[in-house]
Length: 554
Image (tube, rainbow, N blue to C red):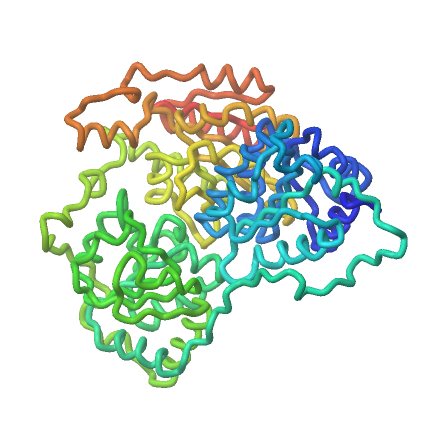
């Protein structure tokens, strides 16, 4: 058994059935081991390592299982960095395995040598370079466990070529190793004391206009049921960050939509007048924390203690698992028989005056995301996707189309939006859509429409080569390119903050004919300018065998 055989064995034992990557010289022993087990683990090759990193990330988010991505040494490894940082920002559990030059060549500036462990240290939960073949199993098993323990995140294991090729003696028995030899540990998430739970309840009972702000940590911790239970028992409105859309179903009277930059005017208005913020599983990033007055009492619940009081000083910091904390709070609500109707303003959303000039929301937050009637058309397109395809994973790239999806798409349950929230990675979409589509099919949800991609023309151009990966790997998906022929979000900043001095984003910006590009990759391409022509495209997707790419002109 070689080091590579051992890696594949451990992946299989860990339940891995698919991995993503791109082969190269240093990684060939591992690819040979994958060949031997190709009937057990499917390898999906993408057009670029970054596409593979996003595919593994999308797969992890959609399936709940470990995402695995493999790359060779040097540029193969460094091409993963953006994908690793994307997964890190959104707490996505992905195992990255990189090959490196032989151990004897490390530090000699060998061909395609890179210190990928050093490079990725700031954007990994943990990473290792394997120095000894007999530590390989310890490190790999620990990496798999740590990626999902506590707050999930990407881990990276860098393995020199000679260790991938190392032939273990017959006396070596896999599975018998001392876990203490690998010192890496996830921070322990503390149990929340009873008096803290009591303080949470007391603050909620004492408020007249509380607001829950739910972040992606609610979905990661599986706390959506508990959070919605608290909202209903307490008569508390819910706003979400981008990463938590769908916590409450579309149209629910307690759902205010997304708060923060490009957020829903209802959520922004309510936050401005809230007398208590209950923030759960969110980081108070610069996109969210400027939308309520200074001095508003805040309860902040997060499993990562380092997030508490980091960006905003809060009244009651609570370090704990969101699911457990909210369940404990709900028990107390049951015990005291709390009546949400005792709160006179519990079910009324009222406009509030902005307290300070610096809290004025961006113009775009108070109205349309797109000019003219485009918001209406995009909303109709989203409604049609939902009506015709049902409960799908919705993947987005980054830009105005991403914000439009968060605000306008009728999500019915949490975890269906897959997007780059924290890192804002343009080019994330097609790769992540490949991973999400494979995950959906693997979960026996492989009917047409199991995953769709909403992207913009700028983001689409960044990853256009991954259309080849869609075709080569038999992926059937719907790709909707909201095409405003500009870099819309950046252009909007130039409009509002730089006196309309447009550069590199203006109307002269063009991309290739999307319909022809789709055809060149063996996919079906359509141009849609209204809801009628879009319906023809989506019907072709439903009844056909190919991925459909729609150039939605807005």
